[in-house]
Length: 149
Picture 1 (cartoon, rainbow, N blue to C red):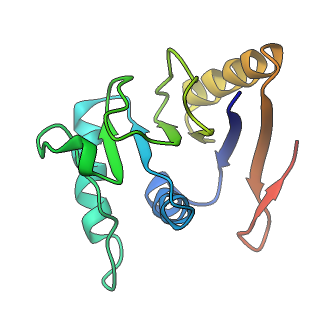
Picture 2: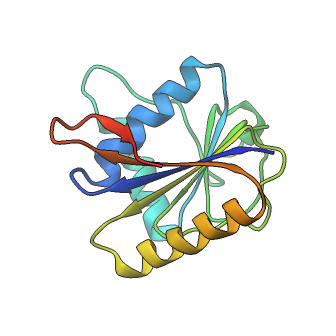
């Protein structure tokens, strides 16, 4: 069963958090999937991951780029796993039909998005009911992630 992490974005937006989490996944040798809620959001994140840091970038692709199997990070609106990812990120209220096949699933949800918070709460309950190892993370006053549950 995959480990499931819930990141409550209260102090920084998704664009400020996701690149660091993706970088850590790559450092572990994991390929990653990022499922977003819309094509527009996919295009915005695609551009952001190339430019978020002047000194580096995150190698990634989406269906418009092709060669999915060669991409360490794959952006999608679907439930596919064409790059053999070990970790799946679900953002902007995206959900997953099936969590099997991943070592870790990460829900990132914005505190300002009431619908996203409600979806994350429902996913938390579902994960616990299914017996997954689920953890909940919030940023402390210094901006560091702290495990809350």
